[in-house]
Length: 240
Image (cartoon, rainbow, N blue to C red):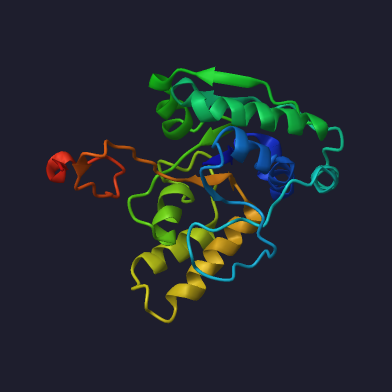
């Protein structure tokens, strides 16, 4: 789950502004309130260079309002700005509490973020096809847990899930190269680490947490298997 900062909005063309937003996010409160602490935190790393090619991994941002204010000043927005903040009515169970907490913290650094709710039927078109939402909450569930796969779908200029309208020629080159390499190729890991390093610095997508999948069933059922598409496969379920 992420916050997408869309570069159609002039301030978000400056990575210092995006970094400021990342430092203003109240990660702990969101994780407790919107995720019920169920998942893997994606914040709090201590280095701007990734130690491994593991994906996903925590980004090097934690809540620091003073640093957020300083970055806004450096970017030329000492008094902040106003940006609409969009959520989907289909996903209000986690989006609304997260958005309200983010809105509250952004106000502390001078950023006004009125929350706009879009019907679920219109969400995909507005956020992903037209890519016209200045700032929004977003989720992406890749079937393959490879970083180059995720970057292909979410960080390339032409990709559907790039709700940030993000464009970076180095990212595009690295994605093309790594997609055609085996993971045990000696050049794969350093290229992927460079991908992640750019994502750390440019932060067009601010990760919040990686959700867990919880499944509950009756004691007299057996045969459950986890599938990458996150749906239950009933074919092997049986009564004990």
